Image (cartoon, rainbow over all chains, first blue to last red; front, top):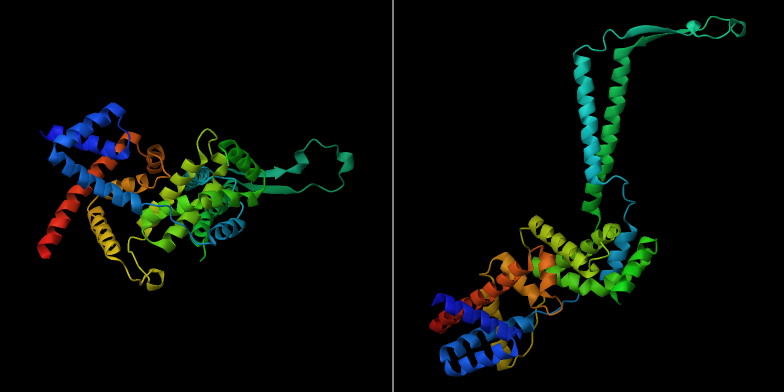
Amino acid sequence: MERIKQKLDEQLLQYLDGILTQNERIELEELLARNTHLTNRLAELRSIHNALSTTSRLEQPSKVFTDKVMTNLDQLPARSALSPKNGLLLLFGILVAVGVMALLLSLGVFDNMNDTLSFDNFPIENKFIKNPLPTIQFNGKWMVNGILILTMGLAFVLLDRTILKPYFERRSRIQF
Amino acid sequence: MTLLEEINLIDRILAGERDLYARLVNKYKSYAYTIALKILENRPEAEEAAQDGFIKAFQYLKGFNRQAKFSTWLYRIVFNTAISYKRKNRQKFQSIENSIVEYSVKSDSQIEKDDKQIFVNQAMDKLNEADKLSIQLYYIKEFSLTEVAEMMGQNENTIKVRIHRARLRLADELKIILKEEALTL
């Protein structure tokens, strides 16, 4: 019984939408002529259909709508070449690298990387050199520390360009 | 403007003629605004969301798939923008300056029509958000069922079922409301 009611409701709605075939429409109209209960149901559904049809219309925005969009477009900053997703991936990669380097440093892997770099040992003909060439102390730990600081600086710049800056610009973009 | 002309226009915008975007904004602004208004139910917010939608569309114009319809793509962006505005501004406000108060002498038939609209709105409030939106967008004749479905990111059949269910529920709710009204008279 419930299924028949549902089927009839569906047909009535299709009738109101005007999407029944000619045969279906004629069949339903004959049924409506015989069945007062169905006619009342059609009246209920028609009432909703009409109310929705009359109130649903395109709304008009303010007259300055287009101008505001175009002004806001002009204020848009040039987009970063890195998408937020790629920026995040790169940032993640850098942070992993920093983490690994910090771990290696704390384990003392670079502690023994001390050497002296002497330019006197270079295969250069002595006739061009009047004074002895300098020697440079090489400390692996200090070098890795330097690289670590540079990488962290790069990570901060990346965080700012791909995440923080776009986020705050988006928040303050539209001014009314 | 035909679809081909629209694609040409998009190509020119992407090539640097940014000012031409105003033509697309003019063509679709009422549609975008209506979608946002149905979701946000607040005119200033809807205007802001629709504008934001157009700006997002401009930013992602390069990635627009030429096989799709620009309008549908744009409506989806506006729809999502309005939904995120709604999530952000859960606390609704209604400022007095934004409310339109009309004073006019109304005929009996107009009063009857207004009453009916109030009852329909009451019945609408009983629907769940998705059903309500589906039916509101469907009844704006300019949007096809396919467009409503794509806009809402749902299957066409799902939307069809939502609209069908919503209308039956509305009819039943309206019957209850009118019965209650009759009892209070």
